[in-house]
Image (cartoon, rainbow, N blue to C red):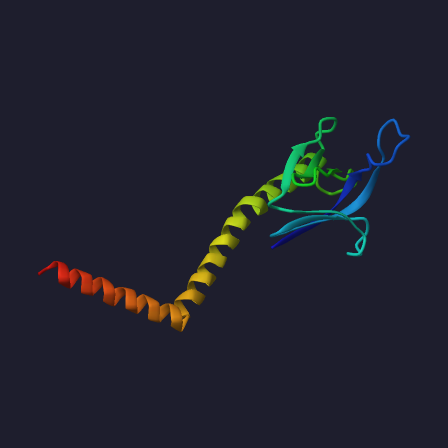
Length: 149
């Protein structure tokens, strides 16, 4: 699964402005990361965080913005809805917030369950594991047979 879109990055890293300027960025959300790119070229990455380390925060001074933070490194970036979009700014932020939360919880849970199923299938198919399970079953039957005497 993937979600991508154009948003504005609050450039609070640039000093000398009363209000930090905003620049257009491409935001890409997938089942493991959220990344912010300066252009549509993937080499121009500005920020990336795994969903496990992602914290979603409100941007205090603007309801049409959210702050994405890396809880491990402490880095964060403010991203805002674009005014020139077909969708309202409030709807854009609501959609991104909903999707980030969905990817972070639901998709991660699905991926973990799928991975566990794959591991269980691989383990169950392993001949050594099958041999050990059979030996344990034989031992269990032997113990149960001896306890009936």
